[in-house]
Length: 210
Image 1 (cartoon, rainbow, N blue to C red):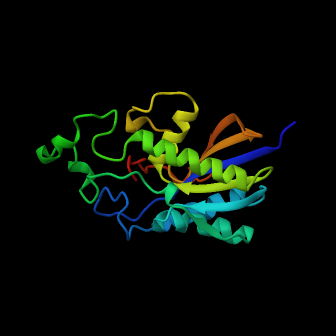
Image 2: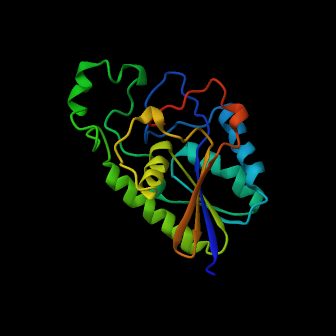
């Protein structure tokens, strides 16, 4: 029997964003106090697992989510651009006005691509490459990849053989959630989902693009 390898995709915790901005890849958006608590909660929940590598998106919120877990395990956080949030031409604008503003309509002509940002196919390609890298580096053990809602959801639906076009409101990828890929050798055998910080999620919307 081949070795079992587990790759966990961890979405970052809650971000301090009082103005409700679609921050995307913008710098300076860090975890809120609740987000920091979420990161600690996840770290405690998985620290006894056989995790040998911790990777993170270069964005601050992801690195802050990875830090407590890496510290508990005595590991370095390995920064990788492949885990970054999806590109979006609308970043920096208030989320509440994105659809209502006529000046944004020209970006919505092809929701299946999507026309407002990085193509879903490109997101899947870089995330698949990242998962493969982590699986090879942690063969027979486990790895954690801290990323963002859309990239995690894209690699999940692609792995499950579903269409990439989707309703962002229906993504199963809450703040500080874990989407877990289990491999038997190089073969993906299961995909799981859990919310270690579920108690901290009450009343907090899962904002697409965050």
